[in-house]
Length: 391
Figure (cartoon, rainbow, N blue to C red):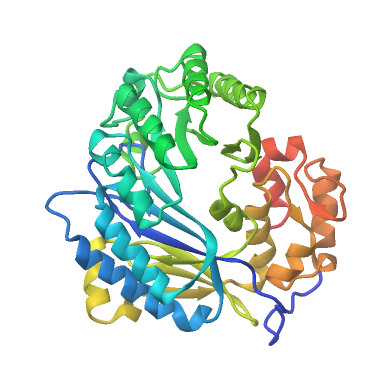
């Protein structure tokens, strides 16, 4: 591999698209499989205090992205829908006053299917949300109980119907390979999701993450590997037959319904990350920087009211890690990315990683297409092996 000369001024002649991620870390009840930065609500939320902290946080980033247009916004968690529509309106009004938002910006908010959240959907739309993502996970009440979810299948269906009456773009999250889930149960779940006519379904294989209750004590009846693979095949095949494009590892969309925000992640675009525990990525002409906010909400709030910069850790991406980081994102996409993006978004020429590309192609993991980096079907299935080529 040729030496990477990335730290030269002006190495990036253009900057990639820019998004904004906003983290709201609270939820009514933390699920036993969840390893996200989420915290159970134990007292009344001071929405205004957190919104003001978010806007203060955003102000610290303005010198780093000055003049750039934000194309997408994603409000994730936690469960952002525990906040009131009024708080979301205040937040988005503040964002618009500080940033240049693209006129047709995609603005997504994550929501739970419970009645309490469902009653807020119209208010979220009025506040400026253009896309709702509903954490359904399953339409089977026994599976929902095993997952520690606080809604039932009836509430899930009603939430989807309400969302579709209000929003043009709706995603539902579903999980599979659940405790005691049979192949027929999985088939029923995905067919029920398809029958709702939503434009986007995110389908995730349940995994036992370390430092979670499920990670410490796996639930009984967790499907064995072979059964889990059979269930995954049912999920993927059902979605394909229904006209969904499997465009990213866990994402399926009807035509024109892809999540623009997540596409920007996978295409190695930039994103500001604000809120407790939020991560960001910002490109400069001379380097790329990763950012992380303080994880615990109270620590984050205290810093934002005192010394906001103390809540932010900034770390340049090492030149030798850039190719791997780029491929780790880009190769999640079924269609891959234009090969020109490598140099445009990292400063690394194709010649500098030619040996790794050849190795991946020889192993049958990467298509032999000079215009794009595209994983083969074998490469999609063994993505970790493909990524090893670029370490």
